[in-house]
View 1 (cartoon, rainbow, N blue to C red):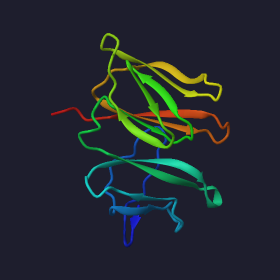
View 2 (view 1 turned 45 degrees about the vertical axis):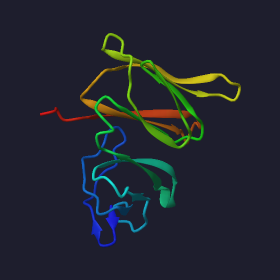
View 3 (view 1 turned 30 degrees about the vertical axis):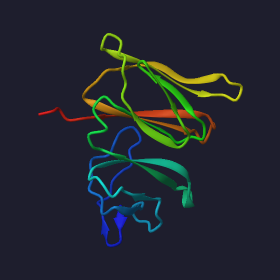
View 4 (view 1 turned 180 degrees about the vertical axis):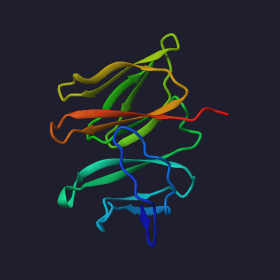
Length: 180
């Protein structure tokens, strides 16, 4: 992360989990691969707030096979609580879903925090995600059960797989420290 003459220490971009917390060099900064002067993305943090989660969504392949990223900035304050799910649709089609007893529709290139309700025996939520096909039928991406937890919050990102052109998703859980 670099803003003018300030920069962060190098860090990796994990795919299956979150990177450690880091201090940003400012409210507007660019992301650079180590040893390169060609940025792969730019992040603009909101004027209000001091803690944010930044999801980097791949937008395209850039020069020399490097990826370019679009940042999704999520405030990490009291509105995104343990047990919540942040859903982000990076695809160009609406995603339909149900977590517990609450249905949702997620517009293309939009995201939101979802608070699940309707756990079965307070143990798990029945979940389903789908996309609506042009013929009016749904194509399910998954049906499953997710455990009820107050020790983590989750991120679910829907995207178009560049090799198959099908809509896929990736879910990542963030384990939170125990309340003192």
